[in-house]
Length: 488
Image (tube, rainbow, N blue to C red; front, side, top):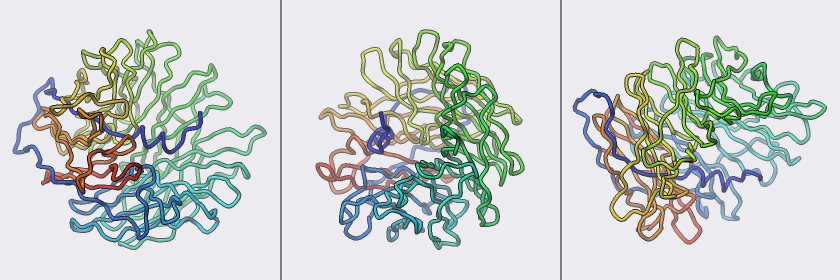
């Protein structure tokens, strides 16, 4: 089945709330639960007819009150356009349309897929667009000192397929102004074109030559690689997560590492000991402590064929074998554990992280989970407590966005089904190691639901305990609008 943007947006919904203390002592300080304000509508360009399929997936906030978000909207003719929203000193300014490169088709369907900011006024957005030939190419657009430059087409490796290309940039990281790294996939110009991964570095504001990301030695002739997320500790020193298919047609998780500007061949990540021979392991999200290192989470099939969760961490450049994370005690025999692939993990320190997603409970309902790593040990995940009157998280529920201000003090963006079977947005706080019941987001204009394609897509918190979350909600029978919500 073709994977459409509608399905992508719905996968990226939201989720729940859960109440579980950390299984180990967390530092107790002056951190208190934040007070969340009423959500505000995010303005769209003149004549816009709402967000395209509720798509507002990315957010970066270099400092409190200074953020950039990117997504898509429908213009006056219902044509999808790329969107940039900028907040300065706590006020969202005039929205901008991302104008695609000059070779774009008349309907370019400019789709932002990644966003990173190295400082206030210095950000990079990557994504895809349609060219006149009907092929899909990738673009990058830089903001420098508060001024957005024109979008440019991304160069592909020399062996790239010509006509029929489908190049996708998936993620970007910018550790310093003018120094960024992006990763994605493209089709090679082989006799039978195959999918391959690639990366490009920006150095001192100039984008360089693309590098092919080599798959592990046991890869299939057509390895169908994915490269999902990237994080960089310094310019030219990065890690990216992905997957590939081996010569036995088994999917494996992989880590791609860059050192001093050069990418090495992907490193397979062993699935947990209880994995099936056909584990179908996949890495979904990557989180890094402020000073490094990083941890990634994903899913695999255990020996019974049940979909479970695992984590792997970087230790001096070597990634550990997969460590299983137990689902909540009320999980079904096959919990069908699932990560959305947005901000599913956040790490306050090298050994303290929180990760969240969705699972199926023994009663058949879909709920959300959050699992906490404390002092390097992952503890059993817990189901978040939903507000009174809730039904469940629902099939389009589950934790999507996490951000941690310190060990044991994190925030989560989520959604749930209320008594009327409507999805509602939720923000959940962990304070001194304890997750509290979530707070329903008060939507703009008296709106009654975030809908099945809306919700909290992104969340950023700062050391002053203030947070910003962005997402979308159902403003009419089929029209989605964007919102932002902040905490004090």
